[in-house]
Length: 200
Image (cartoon, rainbow, N blue to C red; front, side, top):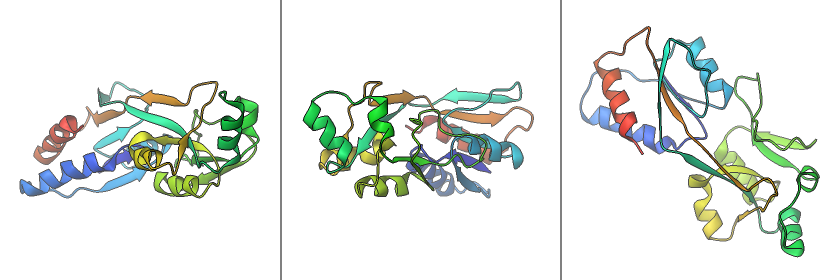
């Protein structure tokens, strides 16, 4: 069982699984997508073999290696009131101004926490994943953080704009590939770890 955080590029994991299939390694792989705290929750609950995660609680039984950084950008549709306000004032917006509008977020799938990057307003729409969140952003339903790889095209096409914010409109994080030390992987697991380690 491999558990992957839905904020990460799924294509990297799928390419690694395709390579494993092409090599004819006999194995059965179950891939589950979770969000935020839900990744480690599922990993521990189901005794999964690997997790690709935004952040996790370290322990002596886990071994982790850092992956390539992912950049996130604060986005909004160009016709949204916040985009107009930023254009009219010519300055980064403050927290109060953002909190007056609907924030779009992805629910922590463990139901035990929420995204620390949220802005704390009273109106939040929680969506089931980042594809739904991108659709909601494109429709002008609200504003929110998105991983750059999912919004580079709509940003370049002017369908979304980067929202200037006093606290910064971008952040980066380092994902982790985590495996168990108490249950060493078999041949297929070792090969999958190699492939995932090399993935961009």
